[in-house]
Length: 118
Length: 111
Image (cartoon, rainbow over all chains, first blue to last red; front, side, top):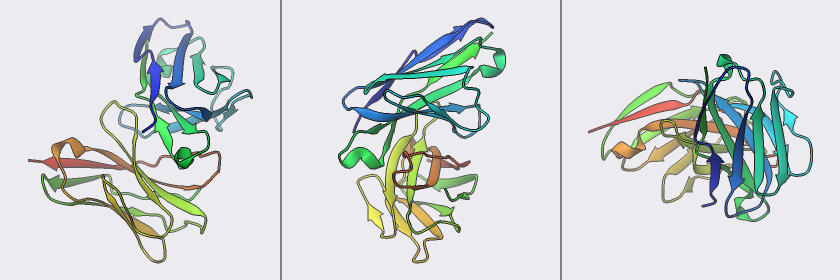
């Protein structure tokens, strides 16, 4: 199946700093990528939808100025957590939808990025 | 998208079939049922999806009731590696492919 990677897999940062997480579709073109957040022992929460070349759309309650999303190409989307605080510590997961073809019905998920803000 | 209800946890003996139920009583005619699973601290993995017919692939079978208000995911011969949280998701096709995850079922496969 299609492969989605995330980098870094783990990051620890100080409060007030910004952290960038990359999401890449390795062997397919992704028209749409999604960002999720997952707190311990909870389900995944959809944060935003990212379409190549256009502004991301955010789910209700998600601060767009805090979670900056850029989808510059059909294989790369980035999530920047600005001025991170301890409450932003979470597991961030991206997914991608394959452009055209039989895989259009599926979302392919990355392995996730564990963010810890001290 | 319609909401789903799943039991929070289930146990299954290794080698036996695991039957995971999902209730989606408000599903509409053009909504699909998807199943994903998440092994601890990893990204979700696609298992199977269907509209109204039963589906089978190399991982599992999906049984959807005739009224489409519920479905069952069947893992025919569960192994310890199948221990995970299983999510049943209902969504419109082409709704930008958005998935809204419910709370899922933690399947514990025991030796």
